[in-house]
Length: 173
Image 1: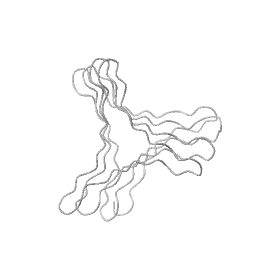
Image 2: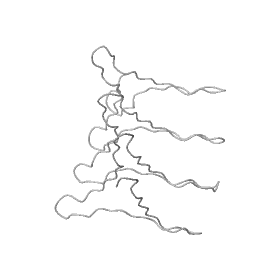
Image 3: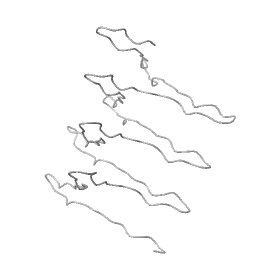
Image 4: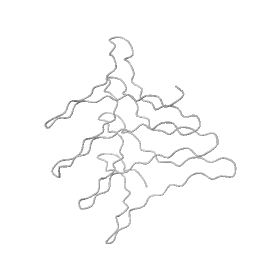
């Protein structure tokens, strides 16, 4: 189209009780790979590409929370899949950043962010690796900053510790 292309809206009806859901599911295979689902915005030529926004609905009732967003891979007898979050590459300018942030609160405590690797009952637990990016030519590598937030009263603590061990040595700092 030479003008603006059309929109596609998929919506369930409004209800005073519980509104309907929308389920998008790829096909299952009994002996091979199951179908994939790809959600992608349109390419942009002279300006930015489109935005992909995933958001739950708001809740106006004080006694209840808004919905959750769950991103996870399926279970597997052998090895479950990975969850990869990355920004695109850039040949001239800067690449985009990744921001992981909980929401702000006016009266109650703000949400926390928990980053933890998985546990194993019979093998080694997963690792958590935090590293800055490498730099080439005259540019240095990136910086890692760990800081507690500002406060009118006491600011938060920074605590770094290794885990306990039942029979072996604890890790070093």
